[in-house]
Length: 409
Image (cartoon, rainbow, N blue to C red):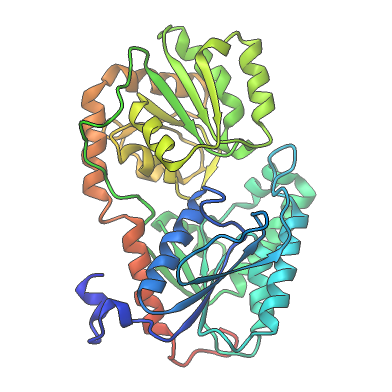
């Protein structure tokens, strides 16, 4: 914690001493490994370190034994189940179930918490918190990891459901008084949707830059392109076989590793077989943190063909070990804001040819691009890092809790 954080004379371990904070999100790290899950892990650990007790409301993602998290009470307010349908679209029923469970838990304990931190998505949990705390002055801090345009909503889940989603998003923005985002572009998007409340632009979600070491695994004779992400539509995973086939025309010995899992995986594997790429593409499924780090280190570049990213944590993870990234320049893909072309990777046209050319350029650039990617990470990770964002949120909590707020804020 920096000096400003304890400017009131208290040490960092006392800033939130004796306070009860509730954090609400339907996924839990490391049972799921997305960017938001990692953020809430880092944030909650920082809140606990600052002296508060934390209750974490989530859905059930484990068997008989609940995960142990020091200083944190984990409450499963809804049942386990698949979050995505066969097309990789978020299902409404689990979101509704989590919202109802959140409301039922919170309404019975509405005076127990000094503050609540909730993700804006899935929306029903935010609306549940607002309803359960109606009439109280309990501050509710809302993380807007993403704000979607109406056009993207319709492309994501169809005209009717997408239009409804856009309306619910506007309602959530309307009932929010204290918001957090992680980029200035996200703030602009939030304001463009009519938000007029208090918004904090936190530092970012970059992991700490790692120095090269002699223990890094060898990259091998065959250059490897890496994909890391859920196998769902908006991650662009269906494009992978076609991008890779295009790259192989110029770099015949290149290989690809596809990490994680999801509803689109079977279709991607089918396309890989149909294109005759079986011998050069490896699907790993879920991997440990150590295995993922090793894959990042061994890769020549990491490909992010996403149609949409709220931040782009994979960019930070990849360049933290000096591996450049190739990012598709889609309008809703905010991972592009983390890439300086020619420095830590390339922002490319969101086409098969454009992404293939980006991979070829990264492989051709070799060690010089790897070194500049690592330098970029070391330089930026302190300024734009997840640790700093967690510190800023503790400061925000400390300055807000106990101060008079408007009814229902």
